[in-house]
Image (cartoon, rainbow, N blue to C red; front, side):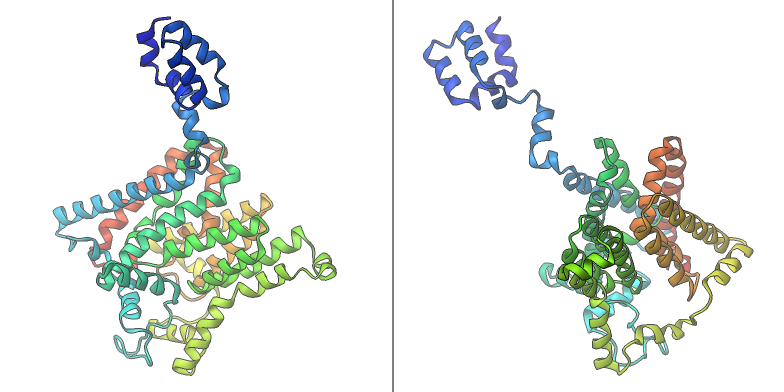
Length: 422
């Protein structure tokens, strides 16, 4: 064996360096080739990584690839959205020159909450108020404003981007049982980082935070961590009104795995406490609104200012399919979402199916406008898409083409002034 060739093989010397007795033996023996071979043969295999890749797989990051994969996908998603925003600026004169320029439409409502708190009475834009914008995301953004010392618009955009990292991370945890190889982690995470309406995760909206908390709640309840999932459910109900639907999903999991009779007999307080925690976020917000305005459900009553009133969601779906243009496109998305809920039910994931169906029908009971982002930022929706694409890999190219095209189009439209992106 040639000594120079051995020196070129860092893995061989690593075997000695990480096992000091063998390394000292080799040095004392004269450091020649024969002694080197003997020292290597006497070194326990456990002290020598077979390759750099196997060493990485045994490291903490190797055992938890979702941590660094989420970061890689976050950076890629940021570059994707920023690049198309630049294209829109160069080609169409879009008002984008800095990151804070993404804060438009509903982001400006969140800004009023961050800067001024909730309104005492409706007075903005005539008879509107910011009560329908739930408090968890403004509180999250307020943290960035105080820590970074930046204006509210930039803090909101940064907060949504950081929440996107959490959304990718927790979604990978949620679907980890379906992941077998490293490329599948990138594919699953890419469904979040490059979903057709990924724009909202870079524009100071609450969508990525809602998605992250929902995915975390489903991950925890799947692990039978009742109190932790209840806390996540409480945060979810403080993010959006449909977050309260997690209480139903939580109850479904409890009844399927434990059973009502066993819960009563064993007096399992952890399950009961977790269930009671789920709607706590909304309950606290309602108490706050009652103290502030005298109306605990002001976030519902204020919808009248946007010409929204409770109605039949199936009538809204039928009207959408009868119209040309975007309403029909959104109607087809609704049908796809309901089909996804059906597939989840078929796969014996009723907690996901019920949550997705409710998250579709509840907002449709008020209005169709702005619905797509509610659909595409639902963890059960992307979970159903991932399981479908895993079984039918040839559909990946079709989905990627649709998602990439829609995402890039939405970025350009964001600065065009049309309210179809609200």
